[in-house]
Image (cartoon, rainbow, N blue to C red; front, side, top):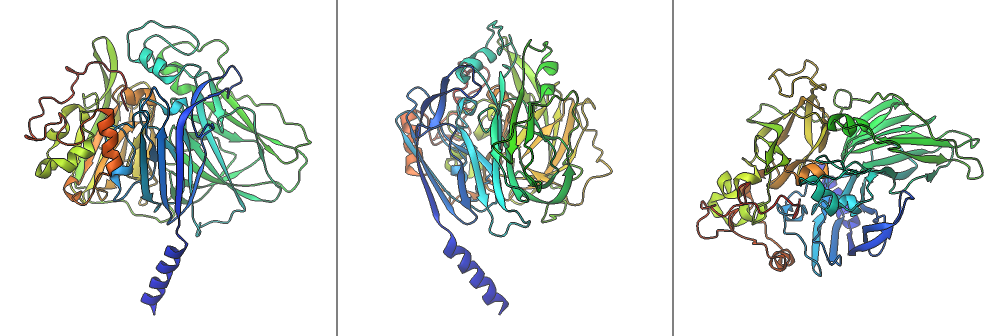
Length: 557
């Protein structure tokens, strides 16, 4: 009887699953989200902000994109969706696919087997700060907590120059100095946005519980968020449900790419409206860059919870100090997955920098990432028994080859003065500990006394400056996955490694015909080792290295 019940449940879920299809033209539009002046942004089907995708657990998502930009290649990454068995759909150009050139189409097709808050964005040419980004919400018919309605809130930074210009200055020796570009430093945003606008109003009803999906889609700084007069409860991070954690009126910090799901219960009257205050995290901008605050710079953005549209909107708030909630030592996953052990392999990754021809680039273990002549996943699929040899992926792909089923412990040492939101594709990893700022930059090998028996899991963790963090995950998702800082400037300047996970288990994975067609049209090889050698897999003499790279411009990132 029990087995029959499981069978009926499975059939029931299958019966309600549906195919959700989108056909998107990716094109330029003009928008003015901060009120300064219109500028070109990348939209979808002539609209911007880009649309939210809503799907249910068990659905199958099919998105066909048509690149109508004319002057840029593109692609879409489905941030936080692990793509189990569908590694070709990850969307990271140079790793899981070739860039999609202008006047080409490309289809992503994969099942939805995770729930929670995610987002999609370009993983090509530092493109998503120019607008190609949007929320992706997976609804769960069995969500563990009560709520009445859902709200999505996105947070981002804004720039008056387009990313190709900003990246050119950032990865060059040009001496440019104005309100958003500082010589030799990552360009500073000019504004913060909520839902890709300013002065945003969110209509609410009294005595309702709202599930708010909070998504940080920023390029550079994190964001601090505070709700006036409303306490809230955390119920999820990065697509992982958590046990309820009552946070009161805490201020939340979201790192770029992170998501939080929170519950807020509205008041029982409509006598006034309330401020939602956000500010770009100045700790990631001026102090670590060693430059003075720009006169008149304002990273604040305001939205309002509106109970009564006839009532006035309260004035913006000013904060002079911040205290952030620490999710690593407080949140417990709802499924209480135990600490993964014993560890089969430890990987240490030390973040540093180096100078190449006068240009400062980031390094991991003294290697600056450079995309190779063949997407690394395609290399894994076409070099046969050599797929487990890191040599075939190229030195500057910075590859780490994992065996299937290993328990991996990752130690990330940050020797920089800046914070780094470190993201791993293909996994939500257990976060055992995160060091305080300025504690040496290198882990001393001693675990904190308070490491949880059921660690919080995330796909993006903010790494403190001059500090370290320790994570674990199980290598059970065959594919090739990027590990990188989610500051777009830092991706394009080499703060990336490649996780080649159980490549000898990829035998049944096929590259779709339209994905190969994109490679041919773009002029990029789709088989062979890092140097596109299909005859001798261990001859990587044509791999891209720091010595033979024509320039450190972001072809794709």
